[in-house]
Amino acid sequence: MIADRTNAVNETNEGNNTLLASNVITVVVDIDLQPTAVTPATSTWNTGTYTTVSHTVKNNGGSSSGLTTYNGLYLSTDATVTTDDLLLSSRSIGNLGAGQSVTYNSGFTPSTTLAPGTYYLGMIADRTNAVNETNEGNNTLLYTTTITVQ
Image 1 (cartoon, rainbow, N blue to C red):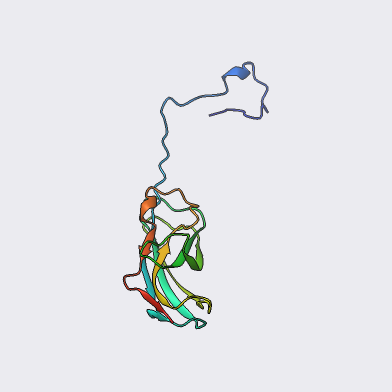
Image 2 (cartoon, one colour):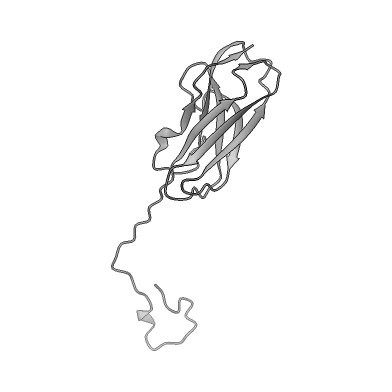
């Protein structure tokens, strides 16, 4: 604590205006963003045709997330979805309180250059790693069924 920090008061002893607490204060930030649902409108997509995916993220932590972060929907050729896969949609989320969830419906049109085949759909919460979380290992969720692109 600092008294008269701007030296507005002329004092006989200017050297006793500070006090340092003897206790250590530990600030704990407990934020844990985790995708809890990713559900496409259909599991068969036609290139060039609009489709939607519903996706939910929850803050399992005890603190508000505080920052704006981005969730990403990705299409992958294997069951390991990463930010190196094809980004289909990115959605910003503002401050998410402790224990709160938010669900979005994101729409997009798969490119006509996307090769026909079988893909995996996944969501990554905080895809840009903007939020320092207590558990960074639970940010990805894979849809339970593959997506067929034709």
